[in-house]
Amino acid sequence: MKPAPFVRHVPRTLDEALKILTDVAGEDGRVLAGGQSLVPIMAFRLAKPAHLVDINEVEGLDKIADDGKTLTIGARVRHAAFHQPVTANPLGALLSYVARHIAHYPIRMRGTFCGSLAHADPSSEWCLTSATLGAVMVAKSVKGTRDIKAAEFFDGIMSTNLKEDELLAEMRLPLLPADAKFGFYEFSRRAGDFAMAASLVTYRLDGGKIVDARVGLGGAEASPRRIPEAEAELNGKAPSDAAFRAAGEAASAAIEPLEDHQTDAAYRRDLVKVVVRRALEHSLT
Amino acid sequence: MTDKTAITLNINGKDYAIEVEPRRTLADAIREDCGQTGTHIGCEHGVCGACTVIVDGAPVRSCLMFAAQADGKTIRTVEGLADGDRLHPMQQAFMDNHGLQCGFCTPGFLMLAVGVLEREPNISDEDLIDVLSSNLCRCTGYQNIIKSVRAAAQEMRK
Ligand SMILES: Cc1cc2nc3c(=O)[nH]c(=O)nc-3n(C[C@H](O)[C@H](O)[C@H](O)COP(=O)(O)OP(=O)(O)OC[C@H]3O[C@@H](n4cnc5c(N)ncnc54)[C@H](O)[C@@H]3O)c2cc1C
Ligand code: FES
Ligand code: FES
Image (cartoon, rainbow over all chains, first blue to last red; front, top):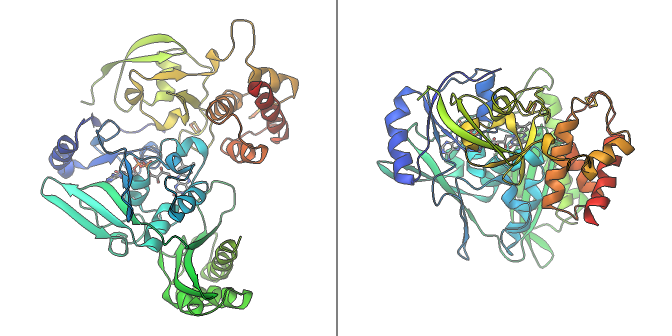
């Protein structure tokens, strides 16, 4: 259970980091952020990168900025930064609630938001959040900057559209309307385990009716995404048990469920009904 | 380089000048290179929490950090909790409440609980359970660990 040998690079500036990343990209060079996914994978020798570009000392990547429209989260911002709301906008409370479901306290002290996105575990809470809210990922390399929409960023299980020489320098989340409601629910076998299915919902009420519904689903398919069929069951209706159940049913029917040796497709479909309904119920509390 | 580099780990106020490969984990360096064997290693992949230490005020898994990343940082391990013969309130509470049996997990639980309570002294009893769910114990059934940490939390708030 010891990682294979590698060369560690410790850039201090973003330019330096991008240059090193370009130089080592061809030799299985990888970014080391919080290390909370990469180091276990290296300990199991599932990954044996020859070079690690450790970004923990890079200046300027530790910022969270709220410009009144968007929340920008730098590559060194750790999960624990969200334990308390980072903005008075409802997005702050949303992120804070979701963050408590990621792994455990000591892991949240090191793991980063952007590292979760780059790692792209189908169950990742931050991947679900990004897909649901329409995040933009800012990928940088020596060649320039690419803005990638969440819907195009995730590319299946633990796979993204980041190129080998690209650093996910920051990500942007649109702030929510001031009257936005949100709900989140995830199911896992033990506290802190990866979710077997999770749902994040946001909407507004206009004259007592749901508008702008977003229903995101994670852990159930290869990548997290919004489920338009479930959203259609909600828009224009007053929040009710019947509407919430209908949304859960619609999501359950719409997905291509992941299967593993413990969980077959039928089980996941059932689970999806429940997590979507419970996320919606949570939005009323 | 994959070659060894010279680093200094400051553990419980004492500097250890050591040479490590980049792949050396902080947990291994603390134990093997600095001889501080109070920090235990269980799973080596972040799941059990036996290796929890406090780095610059943050409780972290020392098996998921490389030693070179802790160069120049302030590290606290179980050996640094007691003040001479006086046990830390957390250690005393574990004794008083039978919070350990074999003791293998105990250094990790102590550093986790102390680390979190120093950052968040007024954390609720309910949230403490969530914090403690981070570490594994094969003996106690957790109830006495929870009791110990709640008792120490009250003591530490005084
Ligand atoms: C016991 C345990 C339980 C966990 N439970 C959960 C959970 O419930 N939910 C969850 O979401 N996660 C969980 N995690 C994983 C944790 O959230 C990680 O922090 C996260 O997945 C990766 O972030 P990191 O900063 O640690 O990245 P690292 O481990 O450093 O890197 C992960 C991958 O992303 C790449 N990478 C990282 N940052 C960048 C960047 N800025 N640009 C380009 N590539 C980059 C790395 O090269 C590597 O391939 C758990 C981990 C452990 C050990
Ligand atoms: S040895 Fe580090 S968490 Fe198990
Ligand atoms: S006391 Fe034996 S593992 Fe916890």
